[in-house]
Length: 286
Image (cartoon, rainbow, N blue to C red; front, top):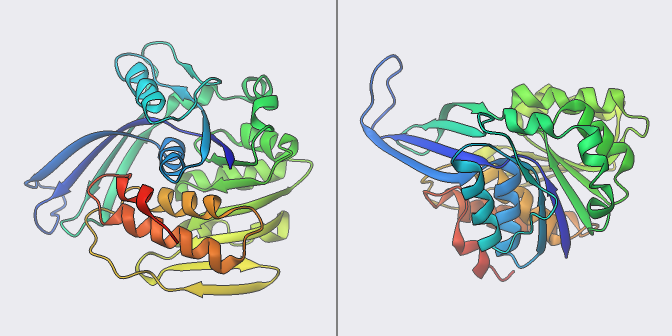
C-alpha cells in the first residue's frame, strides 16, 4: 500500500531515570539520542511493515536536519517532496521517563514545521493524493490541517500528538469547509480535549489509546474495547506512533478488529524496546 505521511521529523532526546523520578532534583539514569518525530516514526514503522511510504516534512536546519533526511532515505522512506529548513530552525523533542518507562514529561521544539503552510502543501497536493491513504500529525498548523481536510481526496488519518496540539485539530475543523475526515487517533487525555469533536466533524473512526487498558474504537455510534497485550514496558515513547502505523497498515475499511490487532501488536513491539521504533515490527505476521 502507498501511504503519504505529513508531519514532524526531529531529534529525540530521551532521559530515563534509574529510580523513581524525583521532581526538583538531579536523577541518575540514562540519556539516549535518536531520530524521531511523530510523522517520521509513523513512516519508519510503515516502511518496516513493507508499505511504500512518502514522508512530507520540513527537516530542521543546522547539523541534524540533513542527517535525519539521510536516515529516511536509508530506511527506504521517500522524501522527494520534503525540504530542509534554514539554519537555526529546530526540530527537537526532549522527554523524561520514569524508571518504569512511563513518560514524566517532555518539551517539543518543532518550529521547523511552521513552514508547512497551506501554500507549501498545495505545491505537493498531487503527490499527496497519489497515495492510497494519508496520515497527518498535529505538529502542522491548524490552517495546514484544514487544507488537508478540504483537499485530500484519499482517506485521511489525523494524529492529535499531544493535549497542547490537539486543539489544532478542533481549529482545523472550524476552518474547514468539508469538516469530515476518515479517522482520528488520540490518547485518553487528548480524547477529553476533543470529546465533542464528533458534534463538529464527521469522523468515521476514532481510535483512543488508553495505555495499559488497551484501545477503544468508536465507529457508527458504537464503541469497541480491546485489551492491551501482555508486555514488559521499557519505554512508552513511540508506542502511539507504532499503534497508528499498525492501524493504517491494516488498510482502509478493514474491520475494526483487524485494525486493532495490527495496532496493538505494533504498539507492543515499540514499548518493549528502548527505542521509539522497534525493528521487531518488520517480523510481524498476523
